[in-house]
Length: 188
Length: 188
DNA sequence: TGCTTTTTTTACCATTTGTTAAAACAACTC
DNA sequence: GAGTTGTTTTAACAAATGGTAAAAAAAGCA
Image (cartoon, rainbow over all chains, first blue to last red; front, top):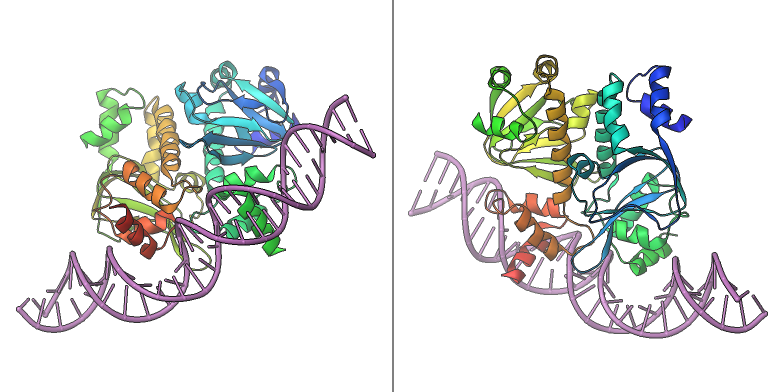
């Protein structure tokens, strides 16, 4: 739980009483590899902090191809936040790439904290905005060739290459797994 | 100014007194084609609402190539918000693609409104989050070929093709202008 | 209008990436 | 260990895109 409080305190100050209020309301959740945290067609009902494991956001286009939008690693927030806030149906899946341990805020908890902790809203909004921002800044750059995208991926996510299937990385980088395999051969 | 109030009221209710407080503090700004609203290396000091015109967010990679990150059209907020909030140096330019009319919130105004309008923070954060979200959802999909990306661009921004130079669209779609020209020839 | 500058299109060839199919490799179960 | 399943690599060829250079078209201006 220390990881979560450290994460939160990056964005503002809370006293130990307030920290305890948060700890009391958090739910631990374990997710097995391949299990979904949230699914397309459903309304996201939870915000999670990733304690252990890697997850990804993905969706399917109109040809049925799977597209990985992002990876979420340890010590980060995870949620389809805009649809969570709007109570709207998501079109994305959030799926465990490895076995995961999460700390979960239910919608009720998330909203209640705004009432009982002065300054929570400020922290909350900073967390969410920076989370969205960093995610987008790590995305592969569309004008670069696949080799460059792969090399930048390694820089951004150095620990992921050995943790998750190649096909997920390929679908994140926008290439086929065969092409990615060829790229890996050529750069080594 | 009606456009701005309609935009704001999408995200929450304000009474006419509160609306007037906002109106009083807003500054009108005209920007000529190619002029910058904010620049890389500087701290963003304003949030703007686009009344007329089209702008784009762009940056330069380590090869000096120009990459267009997004387009911002009429009736949308524009800001490098995370760096604005953090008082941090931006790495992006926000540039007018056409002559523009903007309604500008200075940093002082933006922060003062939180003090003098109850509920402004809730509206503000919804605006900013949805703004970030929609921008990312309109981005070209990296796994699609350039023709598909161009066709989806037309769907997302039907009015832009005749308003801005082809090279900006190319750098947004991640192709050379020659390739984009070829694509346009082939689909018609 | 005539001239200049900017933008867009064309063409040719090199390189990259996709497609399809099969083989190699690794992990798991019985 | 043999068989099964899932993952990664390889290969050959087709298609898409990039790089370079030049031409054509459009826009701006004296």
